[in-house]
Structure formats: C-alpha cells, structure tokens
Image 1: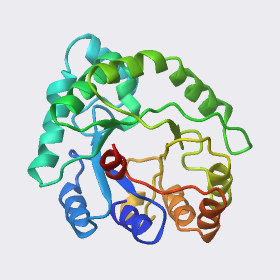
Image 2 (image 1 turned 45 degrees about the horizontal axis):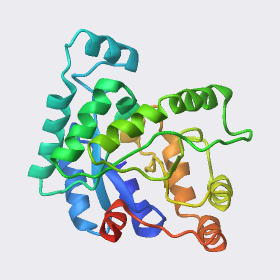
Image 3 (image 1 turned 90 degrees about the vertical axis):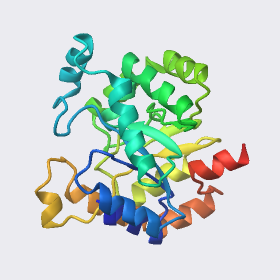
Image 4 (image 1 turned 180 degrees about the horizontal axis):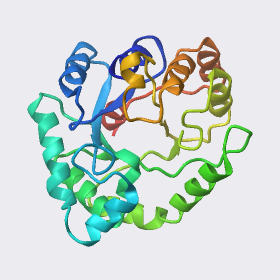
Length: 249
C-alpha cells in the first residue's frame, strides 16, 4: 500500500495521502514521505478495525457509550507520533469515517484546532448512479448526509475547514480509468476530494486484513491512466493538495 501510494503520486494524479500512526509499516511510510516531499501528508486517525481497537463501528459506538475509549486522548497521541516523526500533517481523516460519530467529531475538531491542522475530510459523497454503485453503498452514503449540518457546525466552531465536495466512497474498489474519467468530467464547481486506495497486490497485501486487495491494483492503474489525464484537461480540472489550498488562504 505504501509503495502504491508513492507510485500513484509519482506517475499518477494522487496529490495527498494520510498516514496511519498505528500501522505496522509506519516507519516505512515516514521514509517514503520524506523521499517524496511534494506528496501532501495528513493523519489517518484510527479507533476501529486495527489491533487494540474495536473490530467494528458498532462495537466502537458501544465502547464510546460506556466511556471505555476516550477519543481525544487516543487520537491526539496518534497525531503526536506523526509530529515526532518530523511530519506536520496538513489534514485529518478517520478510518471508517468514524468522525461522523459526535464524540469522535468533537475530538477530531479539537485536535485540528490545537495542532493547527485546519482541514478535515467531509465524507458526504457526491450523488452517483450507474451499475458500479450498489444500492447498499448508495444508501449508506445518503445516511451520512443526514449528519451534514451538525458536522459543519462543529468544525466551524473549532476553525476547521473542508473541501466543497467529496467523492469516492460509493465506488471504492469498483472503478477503472474510464469510470474515474467520467466522474472527473461531471464534477461540480469547487474543490472536490477524491478518496482512493491504490496499492500493489502482492502476497504481503493478500495476507492483510483489508478487504481491498486486487482492487487496489486496479485503482492504482486508474490513477495512472492517460484517459484520466485527458479528462482532467478536458474538464479544466486542476490537481491541488491541502497544503497548496492552505497556502492560497
């Protein structure tokens, strides 16, 4: 996964990634980040689906209700590990979008304000149609949207910012260059974050817990596709990073 991200940046359209402080290959990721200074690096905050954490979001909700997990303490320690490695995160997101949960959102917004990390992912996907989008995935995306008003109110209270739009949730693991090019040609005006999961499908990756394996190679190929580059030109779409947006004010 680390090398897939680097390749998608070097020879594709990827401009930013987020670093998982709890990951087994954290040191390797830090090394690659230093070797690719033009790659924007944020923090991928983890409360679920990793050793030492609840396996599912449902279990996390129960742990939060019982106060067995203190989100701010856990997540701020992850940010500090990234800072101690010499990387200043430019943005924040969470594994499984757990910052949609109110106590996690409060913690993430507080961390953004305290550590001067102004950008936070808004996981409210653009409306999409087509055979590649399952009804289940579409329904989950629509349910996320019900939380939008409170989400933005909390971030604003802590001085955090988001992009205008977000895409990628509904087609995760199920798109190619043609589908990504179609999405680019139909983007609304404004800044859109496209979430992706590139990687090389090696035996090492096949042995990991992630459900995204062969699809990571497919996403990497899409991000490097000449068809996608052509779509960017035709749509007059500019690639930017969070760091570049912050510099522009």
